View 1 (cartoon, rainbow, N blue to C red):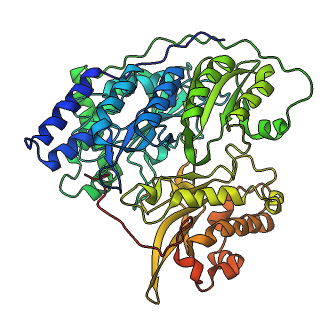
View 2: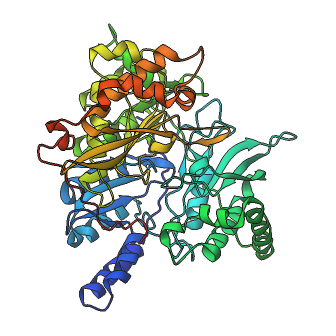
View 3: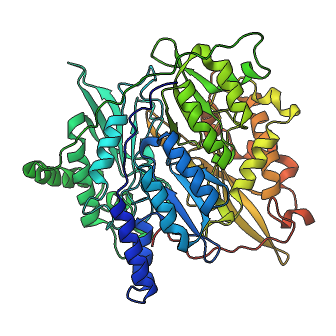
Length: 573
């Protein structure tokens, strides 16, 4: 078994003390509901669709997690939530149906494991995300993890971090392919080495985002030396704080500042504020100590390979740049882990890796530093807890936001659609269509247009909608085709047609068949769906676009008629 690696502590018990003080003041009537809501959001406590129920969003900067943190998640999920938790596209974990009266106990348990929920929601600097394989990928310029942690610590509890016009998101990619999606963030760093001497640095992109006005980030700096990134971040944060729209929160993200100033105007403002920051010489990046990497010794496997192992290995395992080691993806259905899986996964990280794991932006878990000789035994260990499924990072691995199960803004039950698509793609008659898929076909689902499921940047994306017809309201999905993120930035899928919710899984099958039939040699699904004529798509969907039947009046997983129950969301509160 490996030594327990150094895992960073981000929590502070004083944060919990302050939450309790504010909650008690609110309960005594000394703090208005609006003021308490603004405060609790910056402390990671988010209202649900269900009255009296809260969602806790737990921060895992750049996805880092170990046994101690997984045990804390298990304890809180079991004692205060519903027995499972949900990994998000920002490498966070969300726990739903938590009572406000139990929030302190949950926070104390997380604090004991070094985990914070501070600035996980609200108008704050959110969790800093990063490519989960930057430490091990042969294509990465260098490991961005220390820089993601350093910037996390710089902004955590920063004077401006929780008083912004709107949320502010940061991402780090380890190579030019931008696998952490820096292009859809307020501030993105893409690792590169300086040509003349190999010094580590970053391409800086700013003012990207999704929601109802998807925008690909602009290039602010082609190269800055790595130690300068806190100054870059400080300057951009000050610009956002000063110029962000505080009157209309729906037009308050940094991309709207960019729209107002123009690209050159934003660059000029940055130059001015950056000079101010440089003159102060206070915004300095402090890098963490290098964590010990002591991978576990190999766990030998004797005899025939386990059934299903080769299929799992084809999608789950990547070669590391470190000789003899592999990185392993653990595919989570809908991003969920239950209590038993949380508790079992920690010892697996220690027995087979270096004790650390990463939550990923596609809602999975990544285990680095697995001795290749241990892979069969790891597969068996994962299978025993229901996590040995194949198809990680393939078309079967569908991303989804929580949707109408818990979110006030959602129109449809996006999780159910994602689950139904995944199940349909497991059926025998579809296998010929998806054979050879190596992660090039992404499917993402959101319950509303706001793109928490990132449907805009999927080869095949869906967002929830509704249609009234003949006195009935039908759950629908808007189909988006041809989105993605690569070295050139973000491309947003075209809106092609709306589908009845129950027909969307079969529509995916027909779209995959169309791709197989009409693609050109070497063409990716995103490229194909970006160019294919909408008329060709509607022809391929055929009868799925026909009139609604009696069964179509209910959303997936429901038997009753569909009701749009969109409430007041807290994303812009």
